[in-house]
Image (cartoon, rainbow, N blue to C red; front, side, top):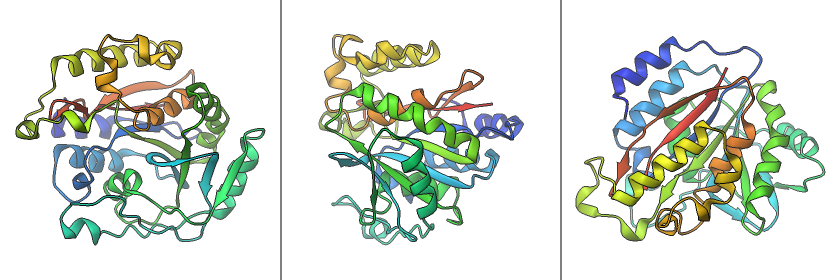
Length: 277
């Protein structure tokens, strides 16, 4: 993994296209990254300092699963504390970013013939605010969430992302928030801070990165064939699907940068990447 200093220096040298916003896939890991000074949260902060200021942010979070696709469309989305068993300070976090109902409607029209429901109930879950509060701590940029229709095949999400790509040209920062490898049942609690990955996790993470570098979407879509132990890395799909959106958002002119390429507790990969011009 890049050191904080290396990532900061590199991010400060980036010059971005004025016409096309970057797009990020972020391994968000534990909700505690929202309030603790970890290398991951430090890197999110450093990266946020280098990014062009977006007109709005649209996040595909692993923690909003629906039947049918939806987008938040309220003026002021609620900060949702969608977890339990964590310290009280985490429940006291508020990320009071405004919403953007007009952008929600524009997105709904943009992705036709996909049926996108305008939602006024959900808000921002920790898959969103745990990272945006480090990227953009002033909470002064409109933030929307796009749900994951968990009843659709993987290709549906990729095809929907192709329709969303136009938003990058409209100043919208699109973020997929999940984890490439995510198995909480197998976490080694005595190896939470040592960048420790099980052998199978390291192998699968390398296979995933190679497919991303080669833009081999078909291989990632047929993820069950990637590795004999893939079910250990991806026991369920909600944290994997946000990454597929970023692949669909990729433009042929994009450069690729990986960051936070590390492991937590053996069975969780924090590997993240950015497409940018």
